[in-house]
Image 1: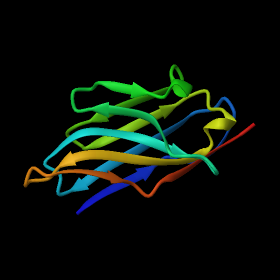
Image 2: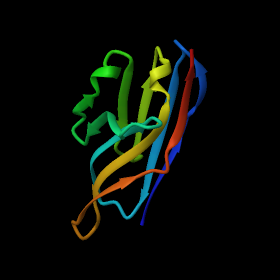
Image 3: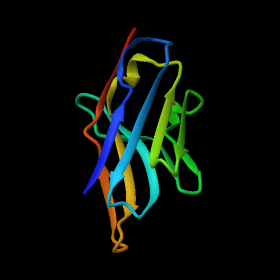
Length: 120
């Protein structure tokens, strides 16, 4: 079993910042990718940012220059620093991990989500 514990969501005003954290635990031998997706009401879930085990990062065009993803491999934790937040960033943010277990089987796993609301 794998658990993803997300924290850091909340309600902020436009232009403010938030920092999301996600800690993975359980039967994880190695992590290939961790990241964040988001889903706004009536919209499809979309990639926000991801980071690989070699610290390669990928961002949605809409957040480039405002959001920054980082990771701590030892703690199996990923962070998303969100600056200059806009109303359109309002969504449920889901932590994501692609990992291998001790039997070398690969899995994708999602967290329960944390609400981010930006008021204009």
